[in-house]
Image 1: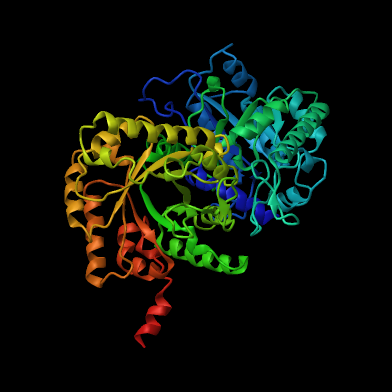
Image 2: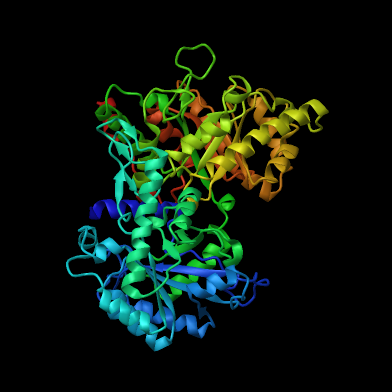
Length: 612
């Protein structure tokens, strides 16, 4: 179980950009713009020990007592004020405003160090803090905590009552027994219990919506009841285990009497926003200097996903279809090993197929009510990609499902995300729907109506999908366009239209097959400003049987894109059989690895054998 807990938290690290602490304060430095009212920073700690190693400690989420104390001193020196959940609640009700430099300190899991090490520091500095308690752990109903922290490693109710009486401490729900993984797919992945539809092997199906909702509500009610009874409080907040929360589970918590909801993530936190608040996750035993540096780094880079360099692999799940789960896992392992060696960071998965070749989509690789399900492959692939190789994953669906086949695209997207809450977003293949928009700089009325139709479908799908997606993931939408010829004069106006909704635009073509497209695209790219380029993804459809000279030409085109400051590039048709050629010829272009010392060639043995 300890391995499961660490794996689940590792998935959260991908969500939080894998930085030791992420904060949302335009109020870090003294030379900043005006701080918005009611902006506050929430920082999440776990265990505090005297013997935490500087590097490679057994617990990635532990911080040393010394570093925590020094951090508290730094907060006081820099003029930060700790706030309570009551302060946040009052600001949410518009009864007060928070101080300009507000920080909410939180400690998860109820470890004994919260009493023996954290509480004395709080009293010394007169700081307030909130402690998230998985109540079944305290009551001895599970061994999960012992496996996570060791024997006799939790606070007692008496100790918590003493902390509560100090007036410095608040206690909130960390669920009763949702701080664990449950079976999430036929391949037996364990995923966060609070947002996962449990897979039932005996019946070869998932629990119903009603069963899921009852399970979560009953657990949260039990947790609140225990906390309120034992500590004499009326807790309002749920700090979700692993930061795993959706709009759906947020609503369930409110029904259970917990209207304040906290996840993990990277979005700024306004007390009066009325939404789930995101918390920064502390890792790697940071010093105050490291925490400060990460604050600044987040402020200038990590908080804006569109600014990040991305390297994409688009992969068809049809290639994973196998006669049994063992063979599927072998293929998945092969794919992820290739991705790990290539060191890209984002995967786009084609999730449906036309199996009978009649030009219509007839199967999907996730549970749904409108298409047949060929195999339940998406969930396992997404989870393994996130936890094993640290890649963000988008699922791809074609808009033709609605425009040409009459299906409800929004409902299908919602079902995809319901059973795959770890996806980063959905890429919508718009086919030929926007050919008129990309080809011409000025759109006539007929073209304008087509554009409106596409974006209406997209907006409805996004709205429904965001109800089920993990809030910590900051759900994104990508529109995919295939360039058919060199008429791309509409790229800039289409980018401007798309940017109104903060959507990414993904364009794909084969530059070796049609160099003319690249030349005209190059001219259009020179006209785009830096923000427009940050929302643009350019991906090449590569001839898998290309000659050596062609592979080198693809590489040259990738280099040209980089010279044009396009920071999001990819390969549109990655296949397992071409993995070696991609590694050999395109590694330097696609990899985000900045150190040649960590290069790994998984085909080295194959190459050596071929030379014998």
